[in-house]
Length: 191
Image (cartoon, rainbow, N blue to C red):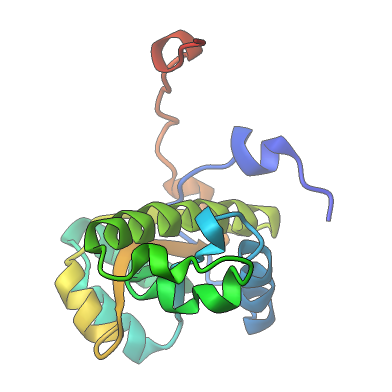
């Protein structure tokens, strides 16, 4: 795989429309196999992923999407619910065996909440970059009713939705003009 910064950043865009070209299940496995190697604190890996592909699952997801995100979610071959396992620390004996990292979290809900949110968000960023590296386009979204999505997809688990990403081959005709970004001096400081 020969990936360029243009593919990951310079020419990559947030897509609002997608072609009908399906994404093979093998590609979804390959995508996760890249994402799982991204670093998280204490290797906690709290992100959980649901790849929404079937018409029934799409209908359940659409019920929880904000009106402005429904059409693009309907058009995407795959919508991915990126969740955060609020009991991620139960896996730490497996994922971080050289220390008793689980003990750091037991009974400390504020630390669990912050770690789950921060690190599943980091993993979501890796997800977008890995998808782009595989030649896929992404449309990340935060416009949804989390309670509805959680009830429809994570009921009976310790996972809550962080954000949702539409995935496929983007339709360039549906792109907006590229929005400006802050300059180095506006966003950065060297101390």
